[in-house]
Length: 87
Image (cartoon, rainbow, N blue to C red; front, side, top):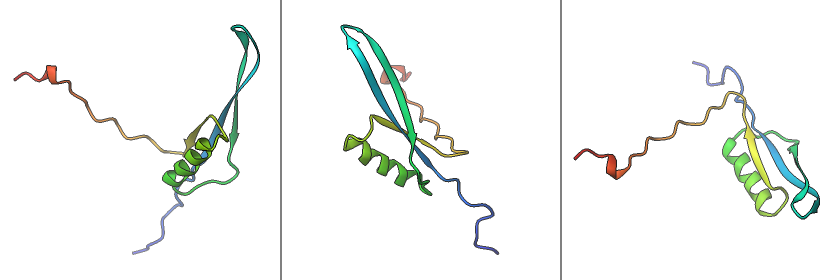
């Protein structure tokens, strides 16, 4: 039985997002969302998320998103309100 994977795992790309504001006078002005991909790809989504969170905490970006081909987030668990219980 082979121990190697039939295909390598999908690599995760970090997309950093930065909001650039220009020329605000009163309530008028323009806002641009600038995106930049990190040059390296990560094997682990958890490691990529931790790295991106540290970069965001240090003020290097305003936000980030992770892109992994074929990844689907888990379905949220159903939540129940106590007033919906029939007994």
